[in-house]
Image (cartoon, rainbow, N blue to C red; front, side, top):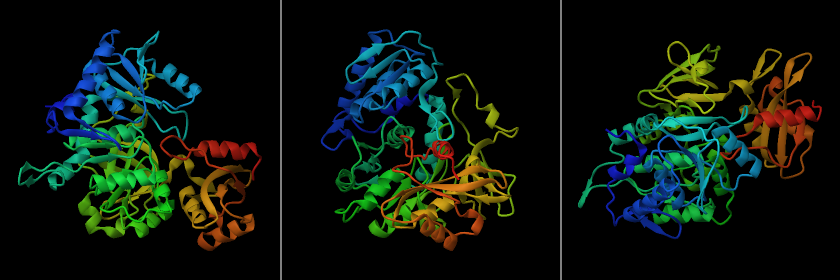
Length: 475
């Protein structure tokens, strides 16, 4: 039985001379990759890195990042991914929060003082998104993360999506294209997902529509993941004619605008599917290819619960909307600070995700928004996502964020921050909203901004938007 993520290399069907990882300009065989992993391990051992030591990896999006990750595991350590382009204050804060034994970058290994040991079973330290507060470092164990991978792979294997036979023996699954930063949970997850499935990996050093389209054709990619920002870039690429043979895209890392999803499908003929997960619990809800074929009317939902995952709606209202509670088979061990997840778990083992959702008769889950984002305007509920989507229907509105601002009479009122690409008055924005929404959902004011604050994963930092608007004295 596999107990360590490092064992994914030994279990992978690629032989020493067969390809394992591709980039835009090179291909690395299994033998070459294992040699790179061994070199990293030797480098770490030479400075005394071993079980229980955390090592920061601050490398570009390349094969070396993946080799460094497995090199850390080879010596029994836990790795902490870091964006090498992160500003110095952010890097310093991450080092203080995680207290690693060393930093491994493209230059070499740098030992650090005052390190904090972690449990030898910890594979890596990831971060919460930080959309509602400061990001928190989370401890993920090898065994829990393997379960996380297998809960998603199980239905695919059962349907024969990653197995079968060809004239030369067992058929390998198609390569797994990774169009996101490897320093993000989504990047790490999709690398390990591909390796666990026995697939080759295709790593992008940076996302561009042209490079993405080239790699899709070169490796005959039929299904991949994309963050909303990448989907928008592809939608706006003027010279991109086709993404064939791509058929399915799973939107990851942040909520995807329904408008952008429709644009993508209409332009490229590719079905866009959502999924749902959190850094602490992994992906718990998603789509299978069979569901996509049999339930096209459900596109917009985040899918159905994965095997072994229970879903419950807490305190639903008349429309069935309430707190989304999930009970996965495994989850993160806790936070680096020592805090546990227990304060979010009820007596039956369900985790309060902090999101609002409803579940339809067929078991498809529909996310309505974050519980903390819900605006209560004199007793009437306003879901910011719904108002933002209406605003984005206007050609002059590039992006929008809606937040609740305190009001002496109503408790809260909705206010919008908008990024506009053309001339449009506040009256025109309000009139457009009134034509699409009931009156209490229409923002009472509109603030023009050059850009909205988002984290590395593309998630809107709504808290910062609200603080900025309050600082300006609105409404």
